[in-house]
Length: 217
Ligand code: TZP
Ligand code: MG
Image 1 (cartoon, rainbow, N blue to C red):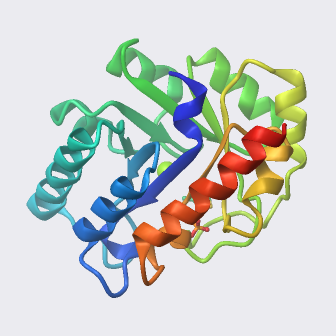
Image 2 (image 1 turned 180 degrees about the horizontal axis):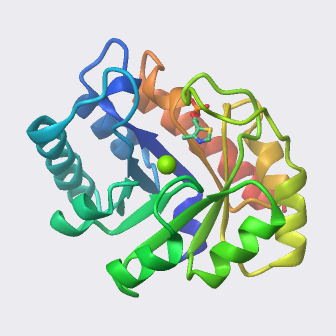
């Protein structure tokens, strides 16, 4: 994958959206310029069964319209069934080596990591990028670890300069530049876009701020 694709990585499931229709939120985010999308339908109030599959199909079709890669969280079988562009897994999910074997070399594989040991294991499993976080406190993931700041991003960027890195957890327009300066290629976030009154405006503003820091460094 190309590391610019991580710049503004939006993650969403229907459970993350408060007022709007989630499909409208995704289209606004795509129109605003997100660079990658992760379908993460999980937790309380998440869709299941056919509803989840149909919603995933609708999200995939929208991403295709805007030419933005469509990644599925955890559910490798759904990713294969829908021919998604990739899969993102955490440390509690299926083993990354087994997933890489299952999805083949053409799909994007992202792995969430919380230590340099996990980063090294993710590289060895064939991860295309690692997610590092939670950088800041988050309310979007009930079982999230405590906020870890940017230290692991700094260590990972120094140890593996060619590894694409994305920060996650509590990232907003006010702190996203700090995450990039620490060495991340991009930020992944849920609520800064999904619960914003105007997801299109939120996306434009985030992108603008991220482009500023890209120019400075
Ligand atoms: N993994 C670590 S933190 C997090 C996930 C999925 C949630 C990020 O959501 P938000 O709303 O951007 O803090
Ligand atoms: Mg997971």
